[in-house]
Image 1 (cartoon, rainbow, N blue to C red):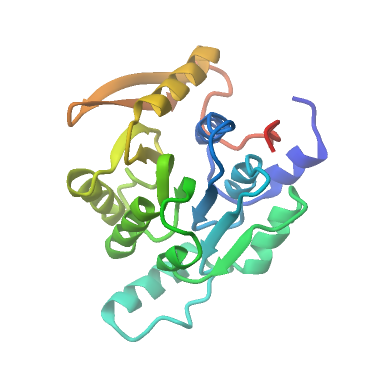
Image 2: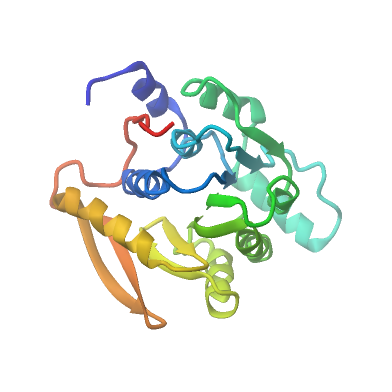
Length: 261
């Protein structure tokens, strides 16, 4: 891909958004191009590396809502749970500011999304139930907030919607995995694909999303090390970059603008 102003700007955005997940986001969002309108949502945005990709697929009449504390922990109370959240916020997101996110975002897109500076739980105050078609959750690494994020995703997703959870298999964040799998066991979350970083799920029929990702793999089979496993009597597609392919290791990608904006 020729070097462009957008790709240079994208490469400069701080973050850990791997190429394989960029491809998954693009494929899943593009598959919704003829679907009814719905909100796009990201909970936990850091500097915006995944947000600018999601925004490529924002259509007329839709909203893109992002939620993050942006390093502001002044609203935490004095409970033990709040102290744990404050400590995690300071350790994981030092020097993060809303201005840093907005500058990164505007290096790619002309207009900011709906920016909510607050706790991830506040997303339900800004997105109507059953209206979101894509949600990316990458905020807290602690059990209780992620459990709330799982509950929010179920409330907000419409039929045919997709939710992606970050850090589902990170050994440093066992609370994330506990909350997600509790939602799978008890609250109807259906996982249909995983990468090293993210778990992709829905609350209705996962087959269309599986077919989308199978078609994505078929277009560039040498890039992927992919196989399907059975989880609770449902297929789950496990994807990793093919280590035998040059450039297949996880890493940043040049920004590619969608044709469906």
